Image (cartoon, rainbow, N blue to C red; front, side, top):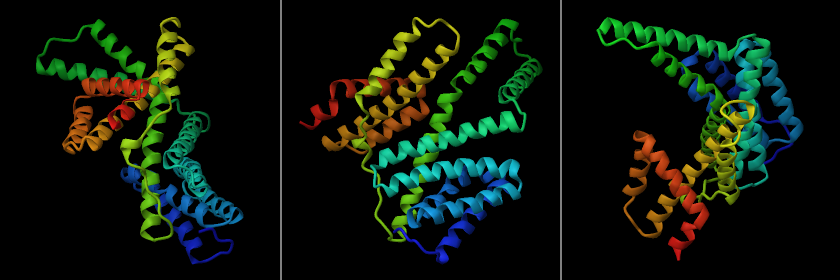
Amino acid sequence: MNEKTLNRKYFLYILLYIGILLVTVFVPFLQLLTIMLLPIPVVLLLLRYHRSLFLLAIGIVTLFSFIVFPVLSLPNSLIAILGGTMIGFSMKKRQHPYETWSKGTMGFLLGLVGVYAYVEAVLGISIREVYTNTMDESLQMTEQIIQMLGVSQLSAEDLNLIREQMLAFLQLLPVVLVVVSMVIAIITQWLCYKWINHNKEEKYSFPPFRKFQLPKLVLWIYFLTLIFSLFSGDSGFSQMILLNVSNLAGILLILQGLSFVFHYSYVKAKSKALPVISILVVIFFPVIGLYLMRILGIIDLGFELKKRVSE
C-alpha cells in the first residue's frame, strides 16, 4: 500500500482531515464523534505514503491548526496526530490488533496529557480549580432544591462527606485518562479497519473477543498494588499512584472476565444470550457486575480457566 509519489488521494486525505477538524472546532456537540474520526486520515497517510510525504502532510495540517482558531484546533490535532501515528505505525508493522490497540492507547494518552499541560500552562486554566468550583456550585444548587421541596436539610457533615468523595475523583484522573484513551483508540482502530476493508486495500480485523488474554503480570501488579496500598498511608503521591494502577489493572481484569464468558459460551455452545446478559449486568448493575467480572478475570488468569474449559 505504500507509495512514494503524490497523487489525488494524498490531497484528499489532507482535505478530509481539515474538514473534520473544522467540524470539530465549530460544531462542538459533534466533538465526541469527530475526535474518533480525525485520526483516520493520519493513519491512512502513514500507511499509504513514504515517511517524508507523511511528515509533509502532518506539517500542513499542523500549520492549518495554528492558523484557524488555534485554542481549540491545536489540542484536537495533538490528540489526533499522536494517536493516529501510533495506530498507523503498528498497522504498518503488521502487529497484532491488540498490540495496535495498546499503542494507540499510548498515543491518545500522550495527546490527552499534552492537552492537559496546554490548558494548565498556556491557557492558564486550572482544571482542578474549575472542577472544584463547579462541584461547589452543584452542591449549593442541590441544597437549595432540597430546601424548596421541603425535604430535611442536609447537615454540614453530610455535605462535607459528599464533597470529599467528589474531590477523590481528581485522584483517579490518570486512570480516567487511560480508560478514555482506550475507548478512543479501539473505536478509531475499528473505523480504520472498516475504511481500509471497504476500499479493498488490505484485510484487517480484530480477533474474536473470546481470545482476549492478558499476561499474568497484570494479575501480579493488581495484587502487589493492593498489598502496598495497605502500608502506604491514607494520602500522598504514592497512594495516588497505587490507587490508579490498581484501578487500571482491575479494569483489565474485568475485560478478562468478560472474555471468559464469551469463551465459555462459544466452547460449550451455549446461547449467545449469556454474553449479552453479562454485558447488561455490568452496564446496569455496575456495583455487582464489575465486581463479579473482576473476580472471574482473576480466577481465569490465575488458574487458566479457558484452557480447562477447552479440554
